[in-house]
Length: 278
Image (tube, rainbow, N blue to C red; front, side, top):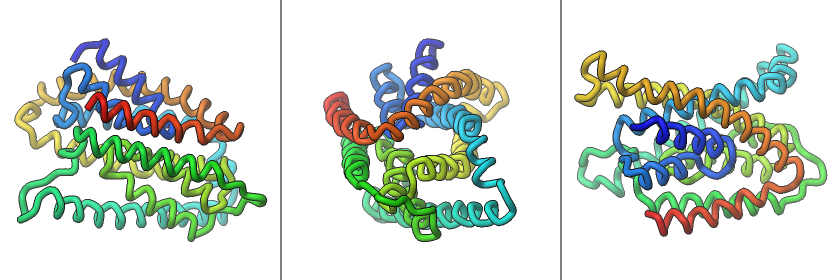
């Protein structure tokens, strides 16, 4: 993998990951256009490392807001921590059930199956992008007179929607969860901050899973293999961090300026492009 390819993938990941347009679909299509295999363990690890860079961008960007909201008092911390636990638990339940359903559909008879095998399926990515676009546009049409505080119920719904996003590249996690919050009547900034708080909780588990998966491949059986696999990811992580900060400022501005629907329109257009390229 060349330096230019890493630079391109990192910028795409950093910008698209934190915008509600599905970074994974954009990165996977970019990999295909550059002749890379998006289903290989090495590319999967690179994608996870890029996710790590954007995770640190989220922490840097939202830290002041989280400190004022989540850590303002002991009661606030307990309440918000419970919301995160509820949402994450629902994400796990829905994600595991959906994974079992996908195994039944794509690997009948107990055949070996990993969800990463679906990452290169252009039709699935296009359908997921279209679904995310429709959800974003519908949520943008809902005008709430009085914003509701985040409740156990709304946290559960947001977590369940996040679980639906996990197996599908193209179903934007941030777009779906923020939209779910808006549909539930949650104030826009609150829905945005909570969505990315869930991302920070979820990302380390995904990283561990992919590192363990990579460790099982022959290319990483020796220490030199690990260094060869991790070096591109570390560079990409720094670049995606910088791109992620810029993307978050863009997202917050459009969310406050009532331009949320434009992200949905983009997802619908991108779904057509994915079908054509794929």
